[in-house]
Length: 180
Image (cartoon, rainbow, N blue to C red; front, top):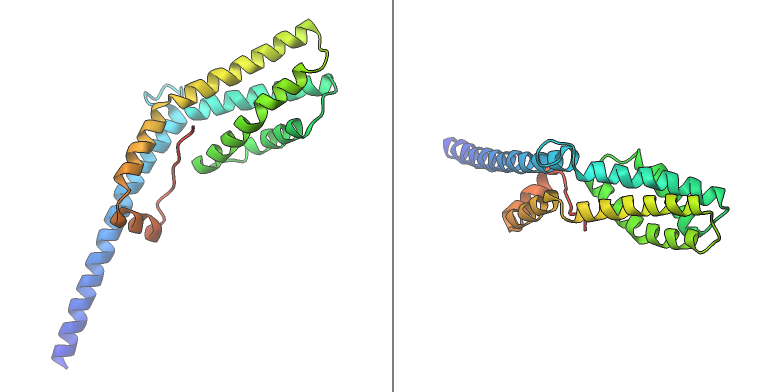
């Protein structure tokens, strides 16, 4: 009986050590993800020059663009998709979802610009369209060179091993993704 208790205690100690190691790994990985999320939200130098700020600029320009398309009676599937994406923007709270949103916007917004340009619009509307397109282009350029993407790539390299993937999958570490 004492031998059984001894084996049970040893198994319990091993399980506790495994659990403690998993939790320690989870906490370390979550700290890294929290730092990456902070750069996403507040910028590398806490100056609010961040991907989230640029995504907001894109969404704001989409709002004005959609009004311009409506005034000029331009309708298309791309413009409808942009309208849907614009409505979704304020409901997004996870970086992974922002990344999906961004990829969809990049696939549709340039086509929508072309569609509005293809109709006869006033010089004033053309200038406004140029401004919205410049805001979009500036934002995607800034996002593509953001230090955030570098931090995510470093994190992905650090977590490329089997043990790290095991900890991520078992303990539910938050996910991050690049914006490209």
